[in-house]
Amino acid sequence: MSVYPPKNISEKNFRHIDLSSTHMDLISQDDILNIGHLIRHPPAEYADIEYLQNMGLITAYTTFENEKVKKLLEDTSEKFDVVISDLFESELYTALGALYDCPFIWGYSMGPHWLALRLVDETTNPAYAMDYLAPDIPPFRMWAPRLLKLWTQIKWFFIKMTNVIRQERTFYKQYFEPIFAKRNKRLPEYEDVIYNASMVLSNEFPGNGLMPSVPQNFKFIGGYHIETPPKPLPHEILTILDNAKHGFIYFSMGSTWKSKDIPKEVTKGLLEMFGTLKETVIWKYEEGLQNVPKNVHILKWAPQTSILAHPNILFFITHGGLLSSIESVHYAVPVIGVPIYFDQFINIDRGVQRGSALRVDLSMNLPRDLKVAIDTMVKDKTFKKRAEEISSIYHDRPVTPGTELVHWVEHVVRTRGAPHLRSPASLMPWWEKMFLDVIVFVIIVGMISVYYVKKAIKHVFGSKFVSKKKRN
Image (cartoon, rainbow, N blue to C red; front, side, top):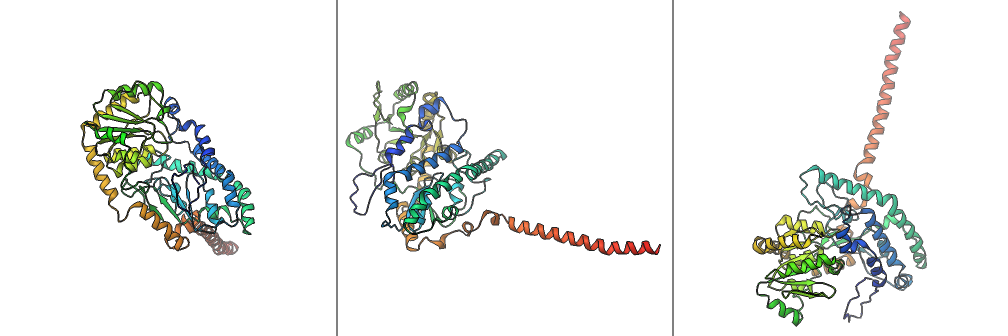
């Protein structure tokens, strides 16, 4: 089930449920996903936690209310060996593992953030762990970032526990109880289902900056989507790149955020600025443009990995999504990042920290600020050198990420959920992890002991006092 229907699939064992019609309607109505809106109205917060949780919840509702999805789930003859689901702010999808009595695996589009780790291990310490809800990256030398991380976790859990999880539990019972009943199965408790995932497949690689320790069932498969070797470029694009005498710059703001939504005055300024460069510029822009300089080439659709693999590329101007970030590492391409939202700030800042990237803020001054970054990266060759060093670390693996992904999925199926890889932390409630039950027991025993000691002292010394008084 996805919003991106695959093309040219001939395998007989493959079926696809297309969710694009309903989900794309949600995306098109969302101002957060419009670059023009964000330039003119920058968010007050780095990430609106309540908005993100509600967005995850609505996405889950929309998925399960799809008629094709309902038909699949209500068919009692359907059986599966494993369920793999994307994790984004809602755990409702874990019900599918219980429904089909099979292992459940989370596919997480980011790194070892505490929001994913809490489902298979425990919440990481905010003093040193990053997440996409706050911009800072470790190590946190000052108290302010650590305080912000702590506050972020507290706020997230408060919203989740006081509002969202109640809605999830209600939907879970109303939606899935009849479906389970058709299979003569009792609906398990929602909390038992949430924490029963067998594994998390993280779209990250271990060498990508400082990361917390992870349990054995948290696997790094970042880069699995990259085909090796890359697909050949279309002839017209290949000709442009081969003839780029001074090299070329590739500019794309991804697939969710689109360059066509950039304000017209900013677009005009970017074209004028690009026109002053001797380098060739490839700009993924989803509509036609007028008055385009000779050295600028507009592509409504761009085969990104194949472009990044071309030897004449100088650097990549990107919004900093994790897929684009990993692709740039894969092909050792330096980056100028213009982060927009979510984890993009962390992705770009880690590149800046490692010396393979520069960051430019998204604003109406983008043409001017971007020109400064371009001039810097053209002159300073250390960005390319660092990109090559990081890329060598990325490629230094025993197997390719795609091979590893397949292995672990099949391993989970063969071992019925890979219980031997699970962390014991996932089997304990939070109050036991924090020894609260032991602390309460010790306090109670201590209070009882103090009470009886006082009573004994009072009895012994009180009796002596009374006897002495009588003698007097």
